[in-house]
Amino acid sequence: MKKKILLPTDFSKNAWNAISYAIELYKNEVCDFYLLNAFQASGYAMESMMVPEPGEKIFDKAKAVSEKGLSKTLERISMKEENTKHKFFAVSKFNNLLDAIKDIVDKMDIEMIIMGTKGATNASSIIYGSNAILVMEKERNCPVLAIPGEITYQEPKEIVFPTDFKTRIKRRELHYLIELARISNAAIRILHISEGDALSKEQEANKKLLKEYFDSLQYTFHTLHNIGVKEGLNAFVESRESDMITFINKKHSFFGSILSQPMVKNLGNHAKVPVLALHDLRN
Image (cartoon, rainbow, N blue to C red; front, top):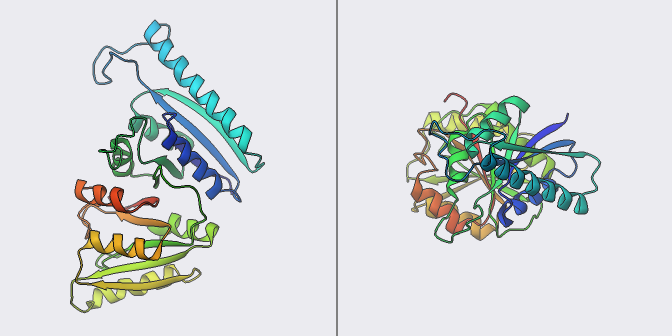
């Protein structure tokens, strides 16, 4: 079955890196890739009543820059991409990035967003670009895979899935993790950072459910003691040279929200690996 992948781009090096990663990750899958550039006209605030329209000089100029950038990106892809399973479509939208993404996810039934963690500014002080954080947090109908700019694609060998076993996870919430593990033949490492107590009956039941969900895959359980969640996750990923971290962005998980600034800064500083944000379908 054909997959539909959204690739937001601001034509930065980081955005190109994420595009390249997506193409390699799905090299054996039939895919439609949608390259999205959301553009705005300088001097106009999106919230204001003053919005430029087609035909106005400022709008047409911004639109032309967007379309030229997309055309160049498609040209660059065609020079490196000879995969007949892949088709590429360019979408130029006058909107802020989040609303543009939400619109195309809904209209085209997109099933995965893959984007860089930093944009054109690439400021070293910005750990995860504000756009990446915003999309991971607010686009709750579609998983988001954020790709650090420093990495080059290597087929994932293991994906780390941190959990406290306290929340019952639905099978469908793990669908895209299971699929990514299958297409890349990666093992899933389920990481529990213990607070010292034995697992409760409820936690044991939730752990058993994960065994059922991952039954057809390679997976192992791991426990770390006497260490904070952020420190433990980073130490585990670094020591094993794991290839990806995934989490379910629940509003009330042991991360609080992983997208709270301390956690995001920590991931950005230390986890030089892609991060897959799945969503709690009950939110």
